[in-house]
Picture (cartoon, rainbow, N blue to C red):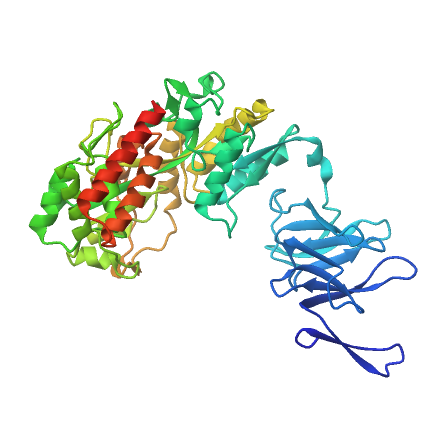
Length: 547
C-alpha cells in the first residue's frame, strides 16, 4: 500500500498495476466460496468502515456506525458477508449485498477488556477465533459471540456520562442476571449537551424514552409533577433502612420518592482557619467582607464570575425555594452580580493552589469523592489549619454549605418492565456493590449506606500501609511533602460528609437561567440592572409553572 493507493501484480508476477482508493486499506481478504472475490477492507479518510473491490474506486459497502483501524480484522463467512472484529467495540456483522452493518457483540458490555486484536479467523467448524492482547499477555479467544442476552428483557439506561463505576456495575449486573439486560446510552462525542437533554426530554414527554434515567439527563422535579416518572416510594421502602440520613429528602417530590441515590461525593469550599477562626458556616455577606478586608484578587480557585454569582445567589435570601419566590431584581442582587464580577477571575490548573498559598486567592474549591490515604495539598497549603466551611448559606432551605453531588436514578413511567429497572437499582444498593465502592476499587464514588461509609474510613487506614510518603510533589504550582492522613484530617472529612446535604431537586433549571443571563453582563453587553430584571422574570415564571 502506498499512500491511498495499492500496488498489485498479476498471477505471473509480470505487469504491475496500481489501484487508487478514496480511503485507507488495512486488510486485503478473499471472500469464502469457490470463486472468492478479493476485497480491500479499510475506511474512508475518517476511518469509517468501507470495503472495496479491485475494480471499484468507490466502496461497495460503507458504514457511518463503526470505524476500522489497522488493529481491526475482517473475516468473510460467505461470498458477500462476514464479520468485523474490533478490540475496543466488539464484533460487527456486515452484508455487502444488503449494504448493512450491525453490531452483534460488545466486548465492554460483556466484561471483556482487550488492548489490541492481533488476528482473527474461522476454524473448521465455523467458530470464530481471535488472538487478543490482554493484561496477562496474548490470549486465544474462541467463539465469544454469545447471543443469550437477546433472550433477556433489554432496558435502556440514559446518563450524561456513566463513569467507570456505573459502567462496571452494568457489566456485572448483565453477567449475573438471567432475566434483564441493561443497555447503556450516553451523550455522543459529537452531540451537544443541550441537544442530548432536549432529545431525552422529547422522548419522555412523548410517552417513550429510556427505561432508566440518571437525574443528570432530565428535570426530575418537573417530570415527576407531570406524571412522566414512576413513584418509587413503595418499591424502595425496605431499602431506606441503613441509608445516610443526609439523603432522607433526596429525590422526594410532594413526599413521594422518585429518585434513588446509589453513590455520592461532596463539593465544599476550604479556607484558612487563620482568617475565619473556628467558624463552621457563614453567610454570603460575611464571605464578601472577608474578601474585601483581605485584599484578595480572586474569590475561589477555578471559578469565574458567572459561576461565583450563581453559587452565591442560589443559597442567599434572593431566592425563597420553599415558597417559590424570587427577588433577583433587588439592589442586593445587583451588588452581588458586581461583586462576582470583581472576584470571579479565571486562573489555571498550573498555578491555582500556589495563588492560594501566596494570598492571591481566598478559598479552594474542594471535591471529596473518596477517603484518601495521603493528605491532600489543601492541608499543606493551609499548614494543617484548613477549615472545610462550605459555601455561604443565608436561606434556611439550604441546611449546609457542603453540597452532596449525588448519583441517582429514576424510572420512566413508560417503562414496560419496571421490575427489571428496580432490580438493577437495588443491585447498586446491595451490600456487595456498596462495599466495593467503600473499598476504593473504583475511584470517584462514596457509598450511600451508613455501614459501608464507615468501612470506607477503615479501608483507607488499612490501605495506607505501603504508600510512599516524604516525597515532594506538586499540585497547582504548590510543592509539598506527602504524608499519611492524620486522625484529625479524617475527622474533618467525616464531619464534612455528615454535614453535607444534596441540592434541591430543581436547582439545575434555575442555575441554567442564571448562567444564560449573567454571561451578557460579564461580556459588557448589558447592565447589571437589566440582567437582574430578566433573571427575576424567568426564574419566577419557572417557579410559577412547577407549582
